[in-house]
Image (cartoon, rainbow, N blue to C red; front, top):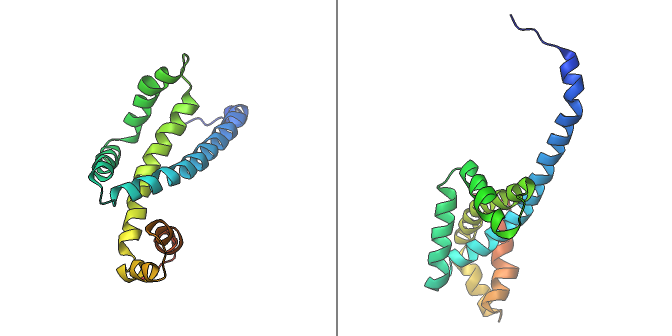
Length: 150
């Protein structure tokens, strides 16, 4: 009924390996770029300035509300032709995966920031730190930690 031929697998093994390596490279690049996109979006979303928070909310919710495959197709057929003449699938994948990861990472970082005790910001302010310094040295290191105990 099912005839499995090892010779076919052996013939295509280099393609499987190169595809797996490309997947790992795309994942690492997307997570790294997504972290910076997510950090910017999280800070914009919690901002008290409406011209920062409203576009951030709309962007995050629209990215999280659409399927990744649709985002990749829009990037490949809509965004990449605006940048270059010949579409590049790897570039489209990097852009789409980075934006998608950034939207999800933004919500994770925002949750971490909001979970940080408000007294931490007050203590940083009492020490004379500016808002930027307090976020950089006090709040964000606590918000980004992954081993927080509840």
